[in-house]
Length: 314
View: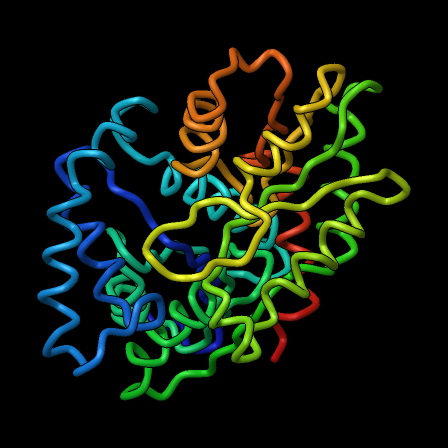
């Protein structure tokens, strides 16, 4: 075993996604088994049967959605490219650094990536979720899995909670907006929704999202809505579909939509915003444009590198 006790493993964390349509059931089961998202009474005794039922019921529709964007999620591909670039950017100042990817709900699972790093001798870690804003349903859930994986090991770990107000990140967002929005378009940010109960319990996600949007918009007027609602609970709003319908009730208005909870393309951008939104509204989409995501843009990876430099020292 190669020893890397004094060298650091930087792990980019995310939700994950099915690589192909045959993976959808497993992916959904893993999501609905997570009690940070939906907490069934009775603990795991009822959680796992619930997850099995709901993943079976939703499987066909979700498979269709993934077929519409090419058959699988590109999330892992983009995150791996970000990790490769990050390792290259940091290799001179952190000799022996390894940048890896760990996903919460599908391969490569967080616990498996940590096990591989430990096997390779790493004992210093920086864990960075690729969620700009903190929520216990996203960052909280991945950190819980990280802590389970490292609790029996003597490691030094740094947890970066968020980068919602990072000046480099928000500056890059603003530059991306300025470079792509047309003079006659209205700016609409769309964030992933969250059960209202989480906010009532003190989750900072909405507040952090509002900070991000204000910093990224600069002097521009803007609107903020929330997408991806599922299940019979009260969600934060306004809902993106309803807000787009309201804004487009002005026949002269055009929209420029900026996904604000994501840093690369996956099902919520490629299908929910690019396809389903237009289908739900019954329009051809000529009055709606979406901002390109960062994906493997080196400018974004440089921002991530600076976040690691500043916050990754513990």
